[in-house]
Length: 106
Length: 106
DNA sequence: TGATTATATGTAGATATCTTCATATGTCAA
DNA sequence: TTGACATATGAAGATATCTACATATAATCA
Figure 1 (spheres, rainbow over the protein chains, first blue to last red):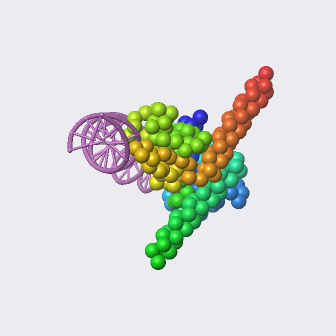
Figure 2: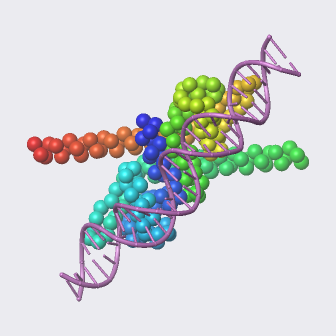
């Protein structure tokens, strides 16, 4: 199980892929809209979309010439938000520690 | 923000590190117990502990000769469990699709 | 003090990942 | 059918990560 989970977390472990999910969280979207949103080369974005697709995090559907992507399971979005909360809390703790250290030094 | 989050997810993106957290989720624990639990070289486990520590996912404390590690924020455990649910659900969906495909072929 | 134990750190080869460029595939329209 | 467009795939160099080995540090004990 840790192997599968590690691979799933790995799929989330890239800024560009998280940015793709930031775009998709508000609703399904065409690749032609994802590329300008995240920035960077078309082929690079396509490679990252493939990684998310292979991890089962997004699914794709052809509509004419376009390909539309969507988040496969909204719990993934919850999971990403939970990570954001952890990070912010962590920053807050560091700040509090720093503040009390400064205060103790007068 | 996507950079910080990507780095945090990256810290979870390794089977050995997830196994360490599996050990720590039930309570703080000495390195000397973690090593036999996860298996592998002492130095390798130590490197992975350092990665988790630098990511703020665990914290360490020296107790005599030993070093005890603990999960820094229990929400990380919730997050990992949520990922497990997503994966299981995904597997279930694939299985259901396969089953209905087989049925449709009689 | 010197030996032993527990853990961390430095290093290097092996392996994986990322990015870019080139090209392939599939769809539509003339 | 030919050309244009949208997207995917293949390949290769650059970069990062992993593992194992050797060594360093720090605490304890004889």
